[in-house]
Length: 352
Image 1 (tube, rainbow, N blue to C red):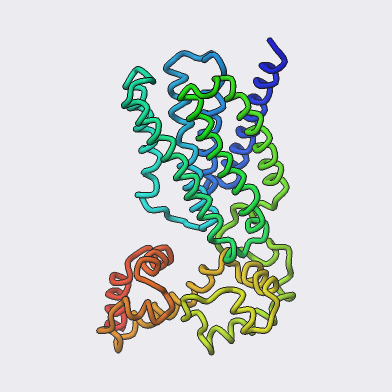
Image 2: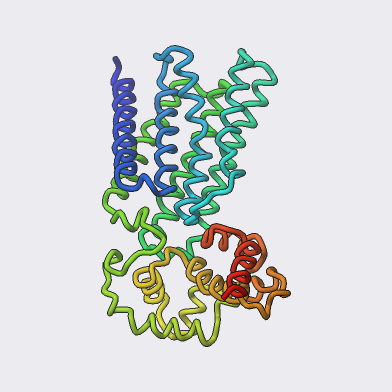
């Protein structure tokens, strides 16, 4: 066994060990959190890539095909992870999950062709690589666009670092795998990826292990003690914030930013971020604004005097930019549709 081959096997073994450890910790401590469960699935897909790309195909063909099929779903899981963790989505629409079976279906079709040099197979491989890159880019976009609204300091810093690197690495893997599949690079080139995967996995795990668990996958509402601040430190600011939100209703401005709200209060932005996250427990700024918007909407929907006012009008007046985001926020909060909630609330008021 040459030194290069030995190094390659050690890198793969180290990667698998780190992925297994990280997955076990996630399942042990956060198995009820959607983002954590998706992260475990993504780890399994990465492990599949590590095993599927071992030189000289040491596994039986069916087993190697299984590893390969699992591995191509990595970017789809990355996209879902970005939505669940960075977007704080507790319910991801069914359509978003279709990326996993879509990628699996393409791989099955490729294996069904038999020959890797058939025109149909080459086209399927192109569709597969483009789809994988698209999901990676979509995950990167989710991480990038929400960075200003993220109230969890550790997570906000990780957005442009680790996740950017992970997304870029997924794209690099797609490119290299495409070149290997087309014969432009030797199969041994895949080993170069594994050294990068090992380094990236080690760096990611080291960062995760050094971060408070509540900052990683904490519940949507967290206490100030978990954040490491005393409630009394920011209580005066919180009281002024609540009074300002009640009197001026700035949340009705659909374009309100945390920087603009901090300017209205005459406070540094970092203090407002810590007050909203550490004391009030919100993990992102839209979540904080929507709590006020939904309170106003609920009051209007339960008011018999506004029975004839369209729900869309009420939502827009409260600060929601369109019906789609409003419906999602309302369903997440109440578990039902606004119209069903209104009917029940008005019926209760008539009984009372």
